[in-house]
Amino acid sequence: MGVADRVGLHVHPAGLLADAAYGTGPYVADVFGFTSSHYTTILCALAVLALATVINLAGTKMLSYFAVFGFTAELIGAVVVGAWLLLTQRHHGLGVLFHSFGAQGHHSYVYAFLAAGLIGFYQYFGFEACGDVAEEVRNPGVLIPKSMRRTIYVGGSAATFVCFSLILSVTDFGAVISGKDGDPIDTILKAAFGDVGSRIVLCIVLISFVSCALSLQAAGSRLIYSYGRDGMIFGSRLLARFDHKRHVPRFALLVAVIVPALLIIGSLISTHPLDKLIRFGTVGVYLAFQMVVLAALRARLKGWQPAGKYRLGRWAMPVNVAALVYGIASIIDISWPRTPNASWYDNYVILLMSALIVGAGLLYMVIGRPQDEDDSSDADAGADAEAVPQR
Image 1 (spheres, rainbow, N blue to C red):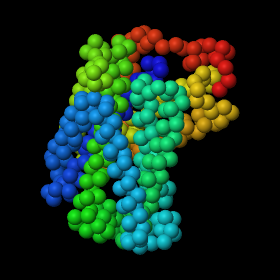
Image 2 (image 1 turned 180 degrees about the vertical axis):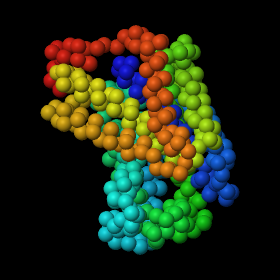
Image 3 (image 1 turned 90 degrees about the vertical axis):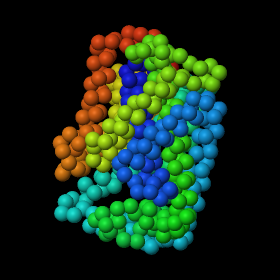
Image 4 (image 1 turned 120 degrees about the vertical axis):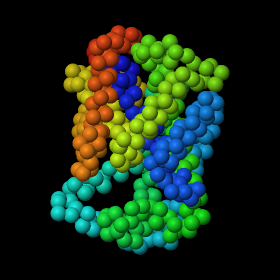
């Protein structure tokens, strides 16, 4: 993987880890029965980061145990909760899925549709984490694509099933749209499971949040370590250190907790910080991937044919073009300002932070010249395209 690819892929773990940690705050408040505030949410988020760091520092075996436990709990919880809601709390027929309920107001329904469409991004999200640890997997050219597909099939199906169940369980869509029912999921869960039962469900949600934070922190630390190992980042000698007993890059792991912690603490100056963190983290992912997708399309137009084991054959070009169009459209949709009454810097914070990170990366490439340290082969990037066999 070349320097440009890794610069792009490194944009997103910090933002996503901050999302996962910050999102636990309201759930912790509901479980333990205290009022959620900006400050309690930040403290809960920092506590989750600390817990994830301790588990990651314990080694890859401990990480794998917690990851499997979290995934199992999340999957079983999604199936059980979704099925129970459909059996006991279904208030609508399937026609409700195609009803706007006046959400468009005086504008075109397209705006409401695009805003609601964001949930689709998060339903089929997370599969890219499989690629972040490819260096630690045997035969990654075969196993990583297979893992990504399974993540999409299983995780996406479970998320879609739960969303479907929740939509059919809403009693008053007008109250949800107007904001009268500000937390419809909490309303549904308490109606379906009662106070104690809903807290148990929220505990399962918390387990999935911690599991997600663990995985993201592990992936982020590996990316940082790869930079340090190849001498392509400031402080490479320190970041390249590796604990061979526990198979953990300790100093890279510390960076992977400090940066998200700063983002979480920085949320003090923002309105609706969770929304901003989630959107920023997601835009980071799409920006990272579109750098690679655009570079691949450019190379294909010049005759490049990848030499890896995973091939798309004749579908390569159409899929590449479709991926670029989809990715750019997603970035625009996620970044679109939706808080007109907020200050200008808060309204455009997603674009500002994204531009700042990309600009800092480009500046570092110009001044520090880290790409000069990259010793990866350019053959698969198009230089020796004629020598590469079929796609």
